[in-house]
Length: 272
Length: 272
Image (spheres, rainbow over the protein chains, first blue to last red):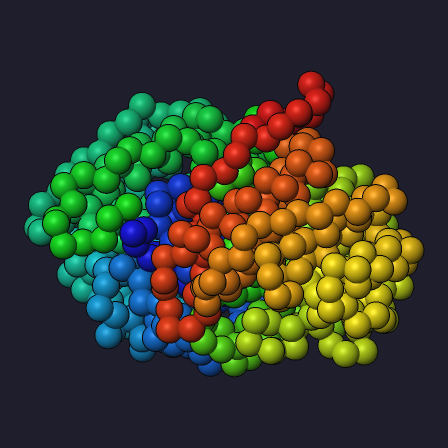
């Protein structure tokens, strides 16, 4: 039986990011995907030309319809758009009986705002404490921790500060630092560095979405967090290497990349 | 290189139908999926409790953004909602340089209207002539052909009438007739019957979406129409047999079912 994974995210019609990419990553990892829509965009690999955030009541109705009928084994959030949607999602996330991965999407790869400025405080206060794992990049970690993050030390300080705000585990993604691509996982009071040689590529559209979706799918299978993060990162890295070169801008990565088998699944969790 | 397939369809957050199921079917068939949103629903396997049709201008902007940047090798339409959205989609479909599969979705499995009553005439006049293939079930075929379809003879008469309205090829799905599950493909002035033993199952949520999406993905790979239809039908049949039993109502089918290799791909079309 395949486990169930839920994304609560925005739509990218070009398919490289957002709920479209999440559903592909879930499927690639053998999880049945559900997708609640929070906002709609007009975008392609070159630009985001429109963002329309949905009414929070409509987002809630979608969440309730899905969770009541086919409860997921793990869920993630992506772009949420407004403080009202964040508050609505958090109101349900408080009682989720499954791990929630929170990707604190603030701006698109092209700089389009996907979380209103006044929404960051709401996010920190209401949704962050519901996160089993939160996956900020450097800019998002700086904003959440109120620390300017410029190096590995800063990443650890930011991760510790974000954990103190209530997130259970924190993955700070260092992709934009110089040198090797280094991510830092803060978990149970301990930092683990995940290093990989940098790949020079402009085709990185949706990498954050795919990473958090892949972790979510692996958690849905019952994989321990550290393994889920390491294997999801390996998947994304291969997907970047194999990027098909679609589009005239920052193109999508290859979600047909090979997926490592899920490790150490406890006997009583769903099978893939 | 994986070919690109586009769906222009509504959202089913529970993941069994709509653009969510289309993206999974595309991925299962090795096609890169794009998904333009036409309408949003609140639904699960038990009921559809809300339908919100998008502004046609917003649908058009999504189509233009996607087609300009990552042109697909094949596309499909699903639920379109209003006459205005149908008109908008048709205005672009007239100049599509790739085959378009039109699933003339009129009502959901639970009876929720997904095409306004006054939209059927618009559909027949504007979108049907753009269809490389149209895939009505018996009720939809009756409505489009203005013939009450009750048996195989009626299916052939309806298919012929729908072809006369401008669709290049017509697949009338006989799933709701008594006896074996028989579909009729009308192509180049000839009827081909596709028969399969009936499967008794309540888990058939999204079968129409998955069938048309699977055909679309196979056309994107360059497979000839008759093979694409036959193999997509085989995939859906296996997916019904393997339905995971999710949800309290009409549950989703298993999109992890095996996919037959694409046949007879001409040398100059994209490889899977």
